[in-house]
Image (cartoon, rainbow, N blue to C red; front, side, top):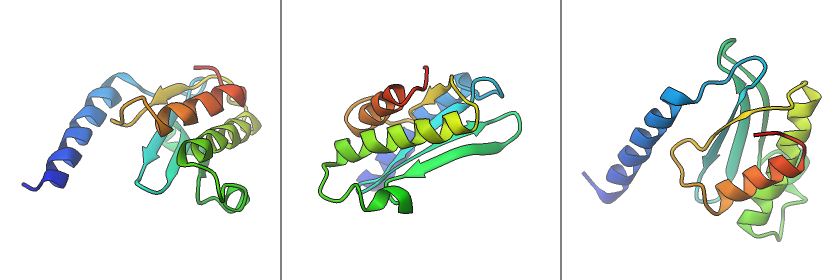
Length: 122
């Protein structure tokens, strides 16, 4: 196995371990984060229905232009605020945070802080 495959397998193990405990319901959906090397993606998911209630990323057309020139962590915070706005539009005030196997640090932490500032409770 290459170094990248080992790292990916470790994240997938952490993801499965967290996912066993974190489940999104109708009244408390799951806020799931995915971080690539260049972008960050976040969704609010109701696992009981199997439906995505809101999704925002750093590639979203509404945000893409406003994120130019920002650092990655600043962009993540803006994505978190936009996601909170979209989720509140769907009637979600409380969520369960799913870091998706990523360490709660840097961009993942910035996104969660932005979502809290935007009005989500977790």
